[in-house]
Each structure stands twice: as structure tokens, then as C-alpha cells.
Image 1 (cartoon, rainbow, N blue to C red):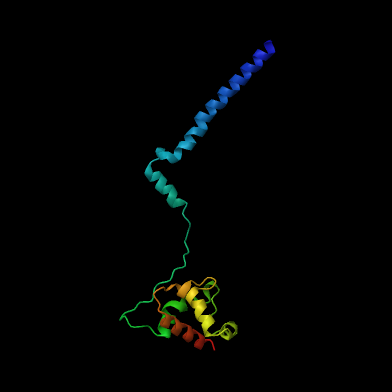
Image 2: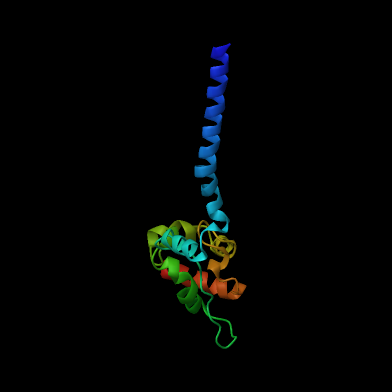
Length: 148
């Protein structure tokens, strides 16, 4: 009987020690994100853990200065050249006859459909949602002309 009493006292003491450790160590850690730290400390920590740089693909809309439709070369230079000039995001480069030959072989309607709806990494209308169908067609024809 003495053995059982000693065992239950040991269990009780162990439970108390664990409870105290939880209160002293774990509970303050869980409260850190709940306003216990000064706002300046949170801001500094947030600034330190930010990535070095961010990369976002965005397209600047081509400017319509006079409200008149833009010709194919103007649209290409202001919208399409960003990717098709350098080959960014897997875009076939303008003037690369080998890359463009199979695309040109599909025909102008297929090329216009790809340009209108987007293809792979290219967003619809190259990201310039304000392009009219005629402006987009002119840009595709210009790009095809550079690549023949």
C-alpha cells in the first residue's frame, strides 16, 4: 500500500511540474502574436523576413494618344515586343523563322485565336485587354511578317 501511495504522489508531482512548465514556457509563446509585443517590433520583424525581390508579370496597356486605332507595328512595339522580342516566358522570338514556321503553317485564323484567347504563359490579347480585334489582327500580321 505504501508503494501505491508513493507512486500516486510521484504522478501527482510530475503532473504539477508539467503544468507549471507549460504555463511558464508554452503559454507566453502562444500569446506573442496577440498584441503582447510592441507594434514597432512586429514591423521590424516583418521587414526582416520579406523576400529580397518580387517578380510579377504585368503588361502595361498601350497608350492611345488620339483615340484612333493603332497600327500593327505600334501594337507590337508597345505590347508584344516585351516577350516576343526577348523570348521571355517561352514566347517565340520575332524573326525566328524556325520557331514561327509551324505556327504560321496553322494559318492566320489559328494565330488570331491564340492571340485573342492567350496561349501558355501569354494572357489573352497579350495582356492588353483594350486592343480591338483590328489592332490585334494588325499586330499578329506584323509579327508574322517579321518572322517569314
